[in-house]
Length: 314
Ligand code: UD1
Image 1 (cartoon, rainbow, N blue to C red):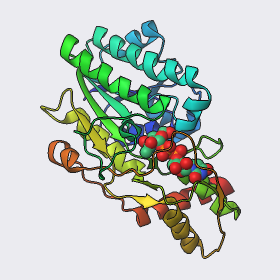
Image 2 (image 1 turned 90 degrees about the vertical axis):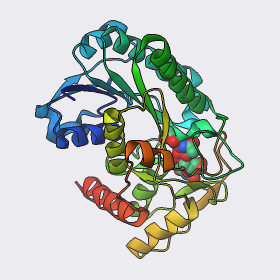
Image 3 (image 1 turned 135 degrees about the vertical axis):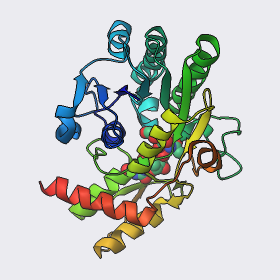
Image 4 (image 1 turned 60 degrees about the vertical axis):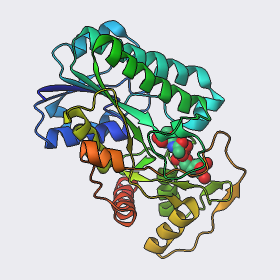
C-alpha cells in the first residue's frame, strides 16, 4: 500500500487506524473527516506525517479528487449510535447510507483498488444462537443497524457490478483510548471510565445482564490492515470481534475491583433498539484474514483506564 485514505480518520477508531498504518510503514496516509464527532487532537502526535482534509463524505467531487492515486480507502466515517439513529434518523441515514454510496462511487471512479468498510455487529440483531456467525441472516433492529448493513450490500454490489474490491468488517463494540465520553450517545465503556474516575454511579439501561463482545481498538486496527492486504477475500464480510462476551454488570464490577471502590450502578429502563447479547464467531476472520486479537478484556480495560486517568487529569 503506497497511498491510503481513512474516512473518519480523526475519530476514535479512525485515529487508531491511522497510527497503526503509519507504524506498519504506509508512506502516504490521508485523512478525510468533517470533525462532526472526530477531533484533530486525536491526531496530534502524527499530524505532520499525514495529509488532513476537512471534507464531507457526501461530497462526491471532493472524494473523487482526494481518492486519486489511492490504493485503499478505509471507510470508517459515520454517525454512530443505535439510540441516536432512533431519536434522529435522518442525519444518520444521510451520512451512513448516502455518504457510503458516495465514497464507493468516488472510489470506483478514481480507480481505487480496494475499499475496507467499517460495518457493524448490530446488523445481526437478536439471534437465537451465539456466537454470531457471518452466515446468519441479518435482522437489524434499529436504523443504525440497517444503515450499516445497507453499506455492506452496496459495497458488494460495487464489487460485482463495477469490479471495486470491497471487504466489510463487522465491528463488535470497540473501546479503548480516545473514545469520547462526552455525549449521551457515547460508547458504554467510555462512560463507565469517566464515572469510575469521577467516583460516580453509571446508569445501566435494563438489568445489566446484556452482554457485548468488547473489542480493543488496537486489535480492530490490526485486523482492518490485514483485510486491506488479504488476497481472495473481495466481496466478503467478516466479524471483527474478540470472540468473548461480558455483561455490563461484570465489566462494572471488574472496573470497581481495579480501583478498589464500591459504587453500585443506577439501573434505568431498557434502551429501545438494544440487542440483548453480542458475541463474534471469529473463525472466518482468523482463517481468511489472519485475525489474532492480542488484548484480553482485563488487559484492555487497564490500558484504557490508564489513558482516561491521564487525559481527564491533563
Ligand atoms: C452498537 C453496536 C456496535 C456499534 C455501536 C455504534 C450492537 C451489539 N453493537 O453498540 O457494533 O459499533 O452500536 O454506536 O448493536 N448502556 C448503558 N448505559 C449507558 C450507555 C449504554 O447501560 O450509559 C448500555 C446499552 O443500553 C447497551 C450497552 O450498554 O446495552 C452498549 O451500548 P453502546 O456502548 O451504546 O453500544 P451498542 O449499542 O451495543
